[in-house]
Length: 79
Image (cartoon, rainbow, N blue to C red):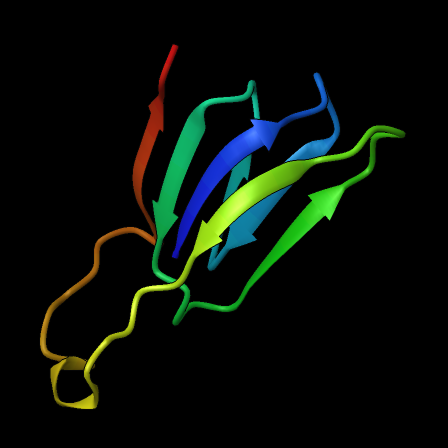
């Protein structure tokens, strides 16, 4: 899954995926993660968190064919 932070509160928002947690820091941040792991998003702030969400379709025949070392595959912040 692809998440692009459009409106991000300064604290209190995070994404849990598998055993890992990523805390949102600012808008423009991109997170790509393996959503075949159990995952959830939290916003404990009193402000909105708005993201652009894109789901990647994974063909069934490729599931389980590669070893994933981390549930978070990519984290990048754009200006």
